Length: 161
Length: 132
Image (cartoon, rainbow over all chains, first blue to last red; front, top):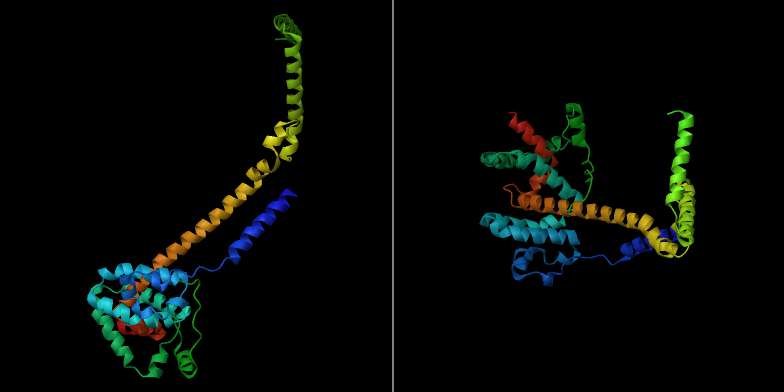
């Protein structure tokens, strides 16, 4: 009887926790003037963001003063496009950033920019030849892939804000 | 020591105790009750876990048994376990948020545009270009 009572109590507590209204995080009006200025490109998207996303952006505003002027311009120019991406696209971009940018020595950044410019100059068909998983794909299969539409994007194992 | 000697020794101890322990009837009665309680509890203990309310006879059981003891034995560990799981989950969330904050601030200030990291072919192209 007591076990049943305790189980009921725990079930009630769990139900209450789940049924509680979801915390949407800080409102735009509650941000400081500096935070609003840094995050100005996100103002229209702010109400739709999750609490985790908002906390992350507020964290980024704390790093903002330490950034170089050109980095400050870049992040403000890019943040709106970033929030418009799907969680899968953001995950993919982070994974590629980890595997590309973090392995390149600072003195080779210029070379990386040149590679990107070179890649940009390829035709869409040529680019598609490289749109493959990292593992080796035989040339015949690559040619086949060129004719096929793009593969579905990989799903992230967990979601980051 | 032989069996006979042991028996004699035991008789000697019993006689000594009988002579020495000349207690009044009230104390003897209390000792008898205490001994019976001790024996009763000793008989019950090996049977394993029982409802705390039934473990002690009399008024003591009202304080030690009941829902209070049940809470200590069952509900409290469950609550602690749930609190632990929730704590670990929150810690993981915070770690992920901190990781995302650092990674995103680097990615969004990087020399290359976001498109470079969204393009799956670029990484393969880089490998090819690096091997040239």
